[in-house]
Length: 469
Image (cartoon, rainbow, N blue to C red; front, side, top):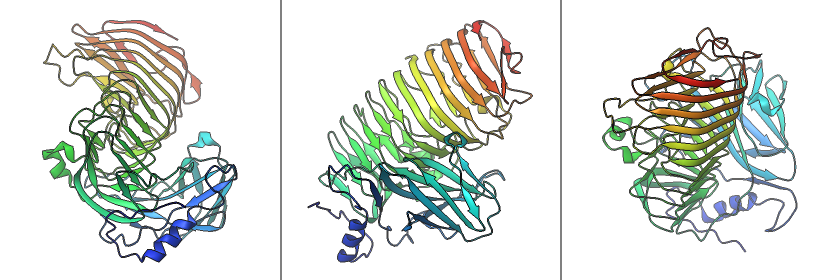
């Protein structure tokens, strides 16, 4: 018998009703069974009090013929551009060991459909307002009907085992935990599928685990409050958090950076579904060494992967939609500790809304605090491998500006950008800055393999040495 514990359930859901709904999510398998599984999560109940989160009416979604609850969050940033979506819808479910068929019925005329990342090779069939596609394995994809203004994100996970014995367990329903909900050393928090937590987390100590298949939403915290207190980010630290694990959750509507003051070694950031509308919503990261950051879908409006880290990071298997601010891969040169031995691989950038601006480049490293000569912020031994950027793209390919710090031994391998623009950035070193060792292996812009930086439309100035193709 599985035991489900309701923790501060703040919606009026009859006990018998939610137990029935929970049972639905455990279809086709017992623990340890090798049989195929398909799990649905109960509807969360009344979302009326949830900030910028509600049920969607544009799409009806069925998976293998069974209905799947569709969430929606709207664009509430006061500086949005015409290129931004008006809102996004999303569904959450889990399966394994079998393909699943996803049927989507649109409540508006459907004239065309695109499934991204296109590298996944998932083809959708459209008949009037009905769209059908098949997932052979768990994927995170964007289904875009007619245009990119109202995408449907499908977040299909592998099943997990709910941690009902966690110190902080939240069952299906809406829970209002408030800002800076505290987690200490060795504590576990689990958000079940069908649960929505309204609040933010403040962590301090080693071995903290934050897991689940539910939603953590901070849409009620304003950007103005966050600017006065950065620890109102959806995930923040009050001290070192070594061996931290954040996995499986949908993180929504952080008022600023998705993580703040979060540091520690040997962390895992895995299988996160991230949606942020406001400016400065940098994607989740942390400062430390020996970290695994993998299998995430990130829709945000600033630096998606901020590599202001220490050493021995592996970032892989992400799907990224970046807004008009920031960079896809960015690192500011600050602090005395160099960032080194970083591998970023197998990344699909399905949208980059940045403009023709050096600091919006896909790959960007530069220094803001140039007056502080003691903060070298050196970067070395980094590899970017198997990166695919879909078009249209205006942001430059690369911007490295080494003023007062050093960049050494960067490798770009199998990089494919759908567009080749008239201006693709610059690489320069100034003052006592140095760039030594940039190695490009199979870089393709607009379908053409690039043989040197001049051909790529990238300018080079200053103490820049050992560029190879």
